[in-house]
Image 1 (cartoon, rainbow, N blue to C red):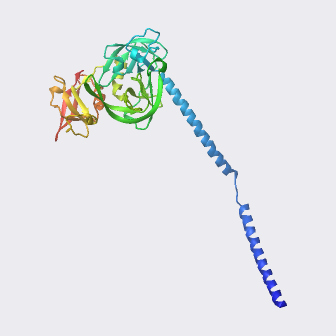
Image 2: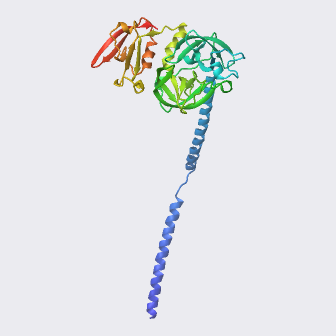
Image 3: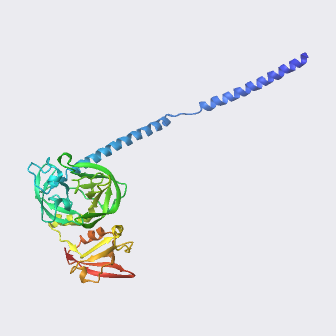
Length: 378
């Protein structure tokens, strides 16, 4: 019995010894492992660097906002007030209401006094209107060019060395880009109001019903930047200050749907007046529309074409009337330049002069042909 107890005691002692040795080895392993983990200062530096970068990003955003604000401030100095009635006060931007004065907006586009606006703001060619600059100086202006179909006009005032806006490229606009609208909504209290938004859509067509007559404005820029009465003729600009459109109309039955005329259409006209003081407008002598107008037509619903412009009417005794061009033809190209919109045609014709010859590529059913036309004077 005594020998059995001694044997059990030895066995327990051996087990305890083995467990102790194992625990010591395991403890030594943990100690040496964690002792060799090197948390270097560079790792803390990495964390600090990341935090510093975030601070720089915020700081950069603030600087960008300040830069945009500076640019918009500079642009507003080139925005003018326009009225069809002469104010009895010191400025047309007086406390008289927009409806009393017919107040609208314009922008200075040359240093020698040309003002771009809407035709419905300034009136027809050779009419008079009254211009007030940002510094309070006011002038009587003469409308030197006006197109009611485009709703654009140029007015000349007797002034020099004016600050003028920079024109952008409206052919490169993209839906979703940030834009700002500047104008004189309602009257004096809210002159040179700036609203922001995005380009909601491009190449929009809208139908206008005025004096029992339907007309269409095509290839418009749609924006949700707020446009109110009095904003007409003001600029739609990028954050860099470049003008990409002229604000024209809004949908009165909905919020956040306004439209601007792409600036590229009027560039050749501005340049002609800037350098020569006049503009000889050439014409083909047709009335046509592009495919965006088809959904608005109540009649002739069988019209179907994917590209080009559809000739609706040929002006009697006009340039096209002397050629083989017919109503119902689809013009796909002019001088090898593809046409998809009426503005494509206008923009090209504005670079030409009366008596210049252009070549139209047309389709008539399954027939394709080239037709030469000598441009006339509008």
